[in-house]
Length: 456
Image (tube, rainbow, N blue to C red; front, side, top):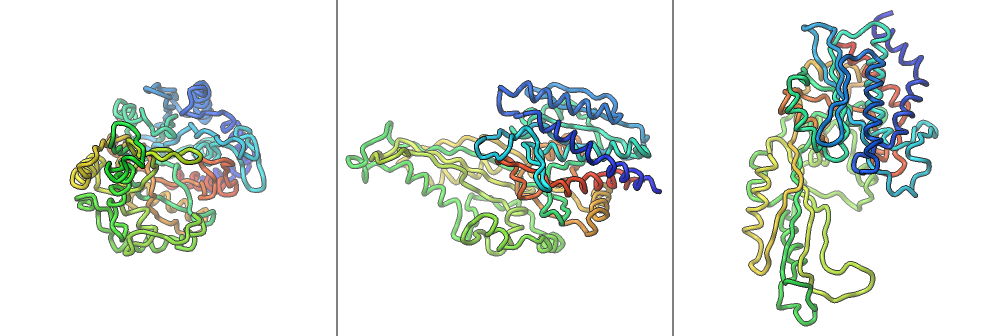
């Protein structure tokens, strides 16, 4: 029996224990955004640290940040010629509201059919446990042939607010050849997936001001420019009729997709009808020269996330509002930067805002875009592992969202991230009744076991 077969045998004989330990983990309500759960967040960090110690990791410690702590551990016994693989994860979770929509206690894991229901089961305590249990299975059988470092944070669900400072301060400690990050997911249970790119983010609050106070719309309408109308006109003008963004210079640095990249996008199994069914819209929208997968993975966007102005209560109140506000997010692709997009947004507003109003733009949050090669040693090992378990070549996709740790590790440690994971699109992450598909999770543990065993 080969080394990897021994490790896979260990995985299969310990499935029930692995599941019970995952239930223990998700029972800790480590909601990072709520002050009343600060002790629970600390408890979750201690739980992860205990797990790492139990599987033989060295120098395991809970390291402070400006907010919630980072759990670090390492095992460097494979020698200087073996690769150093960092494993990233987060142990914090989202709030559970609205609690009345949950069919079971969000912090008392319940198995129903093939699913484990609990907050954090998919995002991402289940993924962290898949990594830990794969390593345990190798350690307990044949021993590791790669060096490992662990970086498990407690602030991902609140934007990894203090992770950047932590990584910059600990660059030497965190040095690695690449990072395995299972905080992505799969297209479907039968479609293993590797994410090769993430979009960045520039997030704004735009306020438009008119009169010094709300006015009677009958007395002043038609004479005073309504800030709500002015805001709507400004926002509407940020796209042309084909969905192209009109901020000056917005596309100047957007990379043209190669033939190989476009082929990978076309291979993705998600079709227009699937998106329509998933979202409930009557029809899709966007740049017609790009397929939807390209629009969400490789093209920049500008979206209105919220609008607020005037009277919005029950009944009627005829006011001309004093101000109006919009929340706007720009998803960015390589080589766009949040700083340049901030300048482009301000240039657009200076050119298009009428003299009848005043405006104020606040940049609330930034994140860089990331792109990884599909031909690195780590990527080949991961693709081979997924193909071994699922029996098919994995799908390569770019994700429309952002993961702060990926860009931070790329910029300050020089380590590209291998983005994968075993969560599914219908896992209800961030929503009531979050769940993990257990057959996929068990396959995921085996895939990671193959991944760590694919390095010679």
